[in-house]
Every structure is written in structure tokens, then in C-alpha cells.
Picture (tube, rainbow, N blue to C red):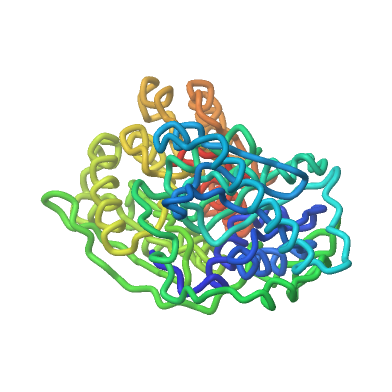
Length: 455
């Protein structure tokens, strides 16, 4: 996925940081390219915005190769591997560092003028940039923020190589990346428009809350448009009926992709008894619609065909359903290249867990009133994906079975009991709550497949 520009990247990143709305947050943009991204994040979260200056230390005869970075508060980060590889002499290292420290001081005066930096002591700080190539500059930025007393440091970038993300664990409490890549190339290649950022763009930033309609004041609860189940409302997107290949059969599916979708939720259904399919079920369609309005693509998927529904035993063939779900996932990834999460109900809940045990690329799982207990204990123990088990409090038998399945899990998981609700998502009174739980769980864990903790 290529971003239109830095502004769009910032908006998409803000959706991944939705859980920070209403908290005492400061968003710091790495100047210059990170400021348009940071402004959108701050605007969406209703957070304070400020600039952060960090300079890469380039090898004198190969400036694009960084051997370290320096930043405010006297912070310095060195890449000893690069220094050894290029045999950089200590005097050359010191000369580059002196020049870049002077540039940090000059740019800080240029960007802030006489204005004091936004206080970060005791607060949550989101450090943002347009992308990350090697992680050295981002590491220096996080260290600088920590030196100023931030209690929680979160690094958020639209695109970065996986190896660079891994090196941020010691300096950032959380890392969020929309598009972790095995091979990055250049950051600019992942934008359709990537113009040079002039100083005026940076100096226009002010350390004050920037709020959009519906965003909360610090400490307040977010206001949500009616029926949106939380989060930003997107224009209605058209649902398209599709036949998805899965071995010898083609599965009925209903795909909806909103503009600038930041993830795909596959809502799988395996029972198909009495004609109750995911594509037709009012409960599933309602949940899918609310996920779409929050910016997530939704694929309603029937794992059993109407003809097969006559066989009462086939919907309980969990291995077969899991195989079909994985085939449909491969098809979906080819159609739209977005991070994937599963929403499974009925026997498809177990199929989703069987599938993720073999697929490290799935980011999160929501089992909604389903039968995760139908997955084998070995499978449940092998699941590595953050899993939410949502069950109505009046669905006593299924609640008991979900708790038994949860006891086998070693991954991050939660049993969410919906007070007063019967079977979900069929219970009309619980559908909005199910959609809200699913959206929050999926959004908070869309980066989990990189091994990078997210909020």
C-alpha cells in the first residue's frame, strides 16, 4: 500500500492510536518530514503538538549511511556495527558530531524561536515521523524524550523495515507501524506525493491541542457519532458480492472496502444451518457495517456452501473450515494488501484459531459467541495472536466453553462478558457493543504480527 501523501499517512496512523484519545498526550514530529504526519495525529487525538529535532550522523564519504544520530538534550546514539564496517576514525566521528550538534541547535532555534518546548515530564509522548529507514534517528528521538521525563514513549511511523522496528524495543515502550516491511528501499517510494518539507511547514506548528469535531478534551471521553460504535465515521462504501476460491469449492463472500482502509476483518461463519449465513445474517452484517464506518474493510465469508449445509456434520469439521479460511485469506491479501484480523462466530471461531496457529501474518482474532473449544488443546496452546472471546452473559453454556478454551491459551487473550446479552452477534441489543469491542481489539493489535507491541 502506498500513501497518497504525509497527511493521509498521519490520518491512518491516528486511527491506530485511537486508544490515546482523551489522555494527556503530546505528539512530537521529527522535523522536517514528520511534522505533517504529527499534525494529523495530534488533530485526531486532541493532543498537544510540538517539534523534535534529531540529526543523523552520516559517514563523511557516504553521507546517506548513518553511523549514529544526535538530538536535543545532548542525546547521542551510535551504530557501532557501521563504525567498524567503514573503519571510521575517531577524529572523523567527532568532526561530524560537532557539525550536526550545531545544526540541532540552529534548527531548534529556527523552528521554535523563543517559544519553550512543550513540557513532556510525566506525560505520554507519541514520537512520529514520515517513515524510518534504520531506526538510529528514531532511537535518538525516543532517548531525548525520555531524558525530558516522559513516562510513556510511543513511536509511530507509517512505514519501516522490520529489522529497524526491532531495535526500538529498548528505547520505546510501544511501537506502531502501519506497514512493516522486510525490504524497505526508500521511505519516499511508499508515497505517491513526497515533496520537500520547507521550514515554514515546521514553524507553523504550535504546542497546543488541535481538535477535530468529536475529539475529546484532555481527560474527557470521546464523543462518538450515533451508531458508529466508536471512532471516525467513513462515508458508506459499497458492498460487493464475491465468490472466493477455496480448493474445490467457491465460497460466498461479501466484501466492503472504505476509502483509506487501514485493515481487513474477515468475518467468518461456519454453521450455515437453516440457511443462516454470514452474508445474510443481520447480526453479522450490522457488525461489518459498523467496522466499515470505523475505517476497516470487512469480508463476510461463509465457510460452508448452501449445498453442504445439508450435511449436519461438515460445519464441525474444524480442520476443513480452517483450510478454507486460510485459502480465503490468501485470496483477500491478493485483492487488497491490508493487515488481516479474524472475527469468527459459531464453529468458525475454532476454525479461526486453527488457521492462525499456522499463519504468523494474522494480527488479531475475535471469537464472538463462538465455539473456540472445538479447536484442539494443542492448537489453543499454540495460538500466538491476541484473542478476544466475546460472549453474552445469558449464553451460559457457551460462556463456560469459552472460559475452558481460554484456560489453554498462552497468548494475550481476554474473555469479554456482555451483561444481559444472549447469543452474540444474533442478539440485536448487543450488536453495537460487539462491534465496539471488535473494533477496539483489532485496532489495538493490527501491528502484532511484527512482534512489535502496540497500544
